[in-house]
Length: 112
Length: 113
Image (cartoon, rainbow over all chains, first blue to last red; front, side):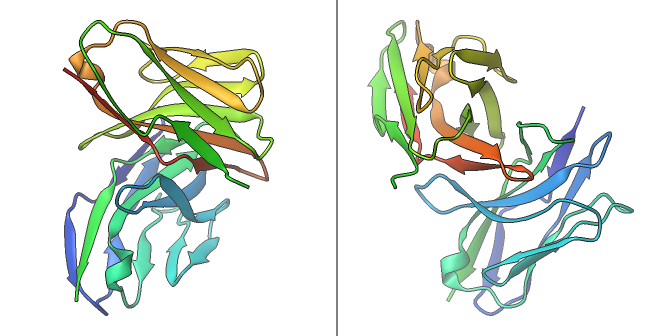
């Protein structure tokens, strides 16, 4: 079945450092890919998405590119802030399915 | 526009007790979902609904029941709570916009002793 694998955390960075959180997926067709963010004590919020190969999703300085050849959707940000401290989830939706398959999440802590 | 709301925010139950978690959305979304979140496990789908009056099982449905009598509400019931059901429960809703972007509620933290 479909699955999403994220790099294990936690990840701890200093403010203004470069962030990469790796995400790879397994799917039989052409899924849509998502990154969700969960701030402490809150529900998940959609951060960005991409619906086809080579699409780049971006929001709040975060970017991720849908790479079909490597089945990856890595999250990047050039300069993290303390306010980016959160748990990040990669997810996929297969072939127009209403259901999402989530990775296990990666906790990011950014220190001043 | 409140989005997705969940009631209650916290609850402590004794083993064997029952309770119902309420999810409400004001976005006129067709689809609604219940997830549980456990450390190291990510989010796992319990049950979902593709419309009023319809429900379907997700990945971990055992020990839970759901009902969708009104389009805006999705109820999750625990008939006989067990310590293994200690978790944070999230409700979400979605509609087709080229993809099914899900909008999440703030969560309910349930402890079963």
